[in-house]
Image (cartoon, rainbow, N blue to C red; front, top):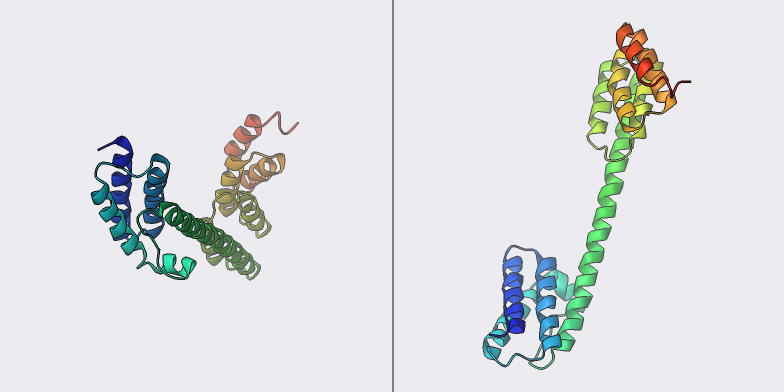
Length: 214
């Protein structure tokens, strides 16, 4: 079996395996790779019947997938000698599936950010009602939805400081300091240490960022 035929056979086997694991997108991608090799390398002279049978089986499997038939308005169509037509169909389906994945990623990001904002605002309202413990719990839960919104740590620290809770504020200010040691955050953290009675840590922090505080 030639190298080209081997590539086709291996990718069709992968496609079948992906399909059986309910991973339609990878099954389509593997099938497209196999068909592309078929088109570029020409019809294999050795193992032709075996490869045609393997391709026919994979096409039949993919035709059962709702994602495929929905995009094409029907099943995949292939006849021997029409590999280019099949490749175009597979490429269209793959683009559609990849676009859906991108949309899903965007939805997940938006949902995560909304949960973060909702819990932060909820914590702020609890602080306004002097429910410090509950507010801290809301902030802690909000942090589980944090990814790269590091400014949220400073905002939580500020709210805790405004509520006269310097010890709790330090939990968030330290995270803010680690993410971005800005002057305002350093000064607020030093103040939080002093107000919570930890003057030694306040002095150490002041010394560490002496140049920034000039």
